[in-house]
Length: 158
Image (cartoon, rainbow, N blue to C red; front, side):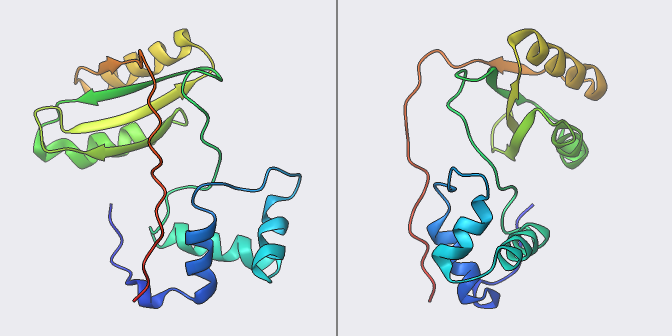
């Protein structure tokens, strides 16, 4: 669900966090401490600001994203959900630890999500359980060939 918080409510530290760490967290034992050092802040403040950004709906998660199928198994999945059940089914799908994110599309298949698991067998079981619990078929679209698209972009603060 989209946030209604306006970017003018973001502190300069929030803006730098969103802009400078959208495409990479420090790979070290204490990444938040490294981010704090880079931003001239404290580890506690960085953790608190990230939690605030997540609580306000501006970010959904902070964590690694692995190349698909390099660690475990992953797939893109789609469901054709009746409009009146869309939020209910999206909440159900989001309840799985294996689901990275889901989103709505304007199409017969209107709910899409990415799921990742330890192996293909576990992934298939998760998709089957979502299908059984929702009563709606899940279209499993495993990646055949990967293309890299950088989704990071400089944020504009005006």
